[in-house]
Image 1 (tube, helix red, strand yellow):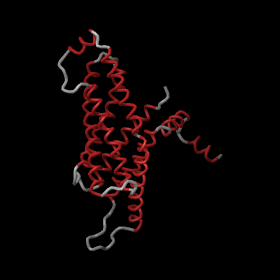
Image 2 (tube, helix red, strand yellow):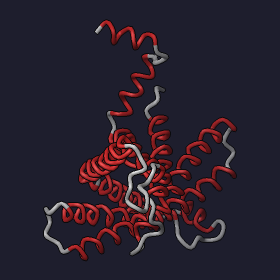
Image 3 (cartoon, helix red, strand yellow):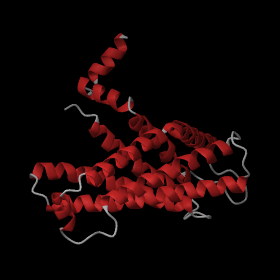
Image 4 (cartoon, rainbow, N blue to C red):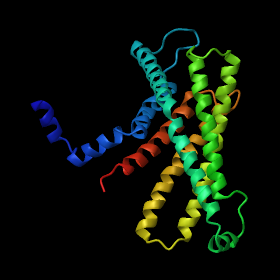
Length: 263
C-alpha cells in the first residue's frame, strides 16, 4: 500500500483526474470506448508485422508469431465483450423513441399562431429535423436486434444457417450506415445554426469543438459501415478497419471525458 501511495504521489495524476477517470469508467460509454481502442488498435499493428516468406520459411522471430496470435485474440475477445454489453443497448433507444413521440405530440398539440409563423419562415427542408431524428432512431432500432441475432447465431445460441447469418449482419450494418449519414446531415445543420447564431465566441468555440469531435466519429464510422455492408467488403486488409475504428474510439473517448469533467 505504501509503495502504491508513493507511486501515485510521484505521478502527475491529481485527485481531480482520478475522480474524473472514475466517473468516466463508471459509465457505459466510457468503458465501451476504452475497450474499443483495445479492439481496433491491434488491427492497425497486425498488417505491419513481418510476414512469412513465399517459400514457407520463417523469416520472422517466434516472438512476432506470439505477438500476432495475442493481438488477434485480444481484438476478437474484446469485440465479443462489446457486443455482449450492447445486448442491453436497445433500452436507451426505446427511451429515445418515446421522447421523440412525446415531443411530436406536444408540438402537434400546441399548433398556435406563433408556431405556424415560425414554420412559414424560410424555405422548407426536404427532411425536417423531427423526421430526420425519427428516421435515425428507427434505423438504429432496426440495427440492434439484427446485430444481437447474428451474433448469437454465430455462437450457436440461435439456430440459423450461415448464409442467413451473413445476410442479417450485412443488413444490420446498412441500417447503421443510414444512422451515420443522417447524423452527418444533422451535424451540418447544427453547424450552420451555430455559425449564424449570436452566441458569444467562448460558447461558439466550445460547441465547435464538440461538433468537430462528432464529425471525427461519424466520418470514421461511415467507411466502416459501408465496408461491412458490402458483400465483398471495401478492402481486404485489417489496417483500414483498425485505423477508422481507432479514430472513432478516440473521438468518443474525448467527448465522454469532457462530459464527466467536474463543473
